Amino acid sequence: MPRETREQKKRRAAEAFQRLMKAYPDAHCALHHDGPWQLLVATILSAQCTDARVNLVTPDLFKKYPTPETMAAAAPTDLEKMIASTGFFRNKAKAIKSAATDIAEKHGGQVPRTMEELTLLRGVGRKTANVVLGNAFEQNLGVVVDTHVGRLTRRLRLSSHGDPEKVERDLMALVPDKHWTMWSHLLIFHGRKICVARRPRCPQCVLADICPSAGKV
Image (cartoon, rainbow, N blue to C red; front, side, top):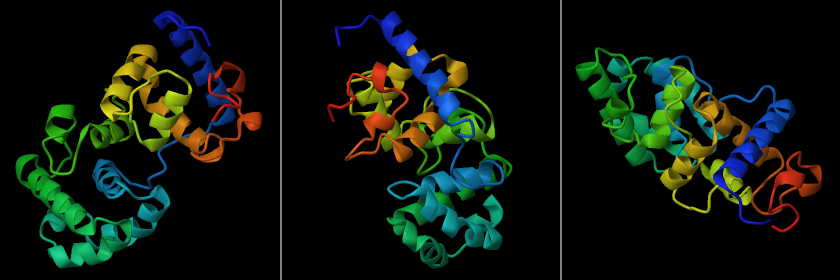
């Protein structure tokens, strides 16, 4: 594909968005949750872990510790045991307990609604904050870049970067902000079903004719 201008990339991204919306009209956050607190915890647990595994763990976790206050008072060893199957459980338990304590003591038990406040919580980086802000508070302040979003963005040549924050900046310049949250959901759905990591199913892909990597991966 010849070198594109930013406007050409924007048009191609817009076309990709429309096609993916038709292909995945039910695209949504795959982490099961009831409110911003549960989504925050689930997203912390999802680091280096599948959403499916997190969804198996969180029902019992939230039944026992339904609020930031109860989670803050939890015994670290009990938290570790309950979330062990998600991996890196000691660090995750520390992060969840610390975030719960800050939310209970500094935010009146309510999950903060700003990027600045969220990223001050332990275990919460920009990606996690974007998940919470976009899905729990309907604030499109950024694009969630996980492994699927990063991979597909590079295959579509909408970014050449490997660093998630650089990929996010590239996408924010190409995709209208009202679509940022849904863009991530669409790429994640497509990355799981068609544009898989090792053997992408290009013949079945609705983006094949506008994807520079189609048939070449």
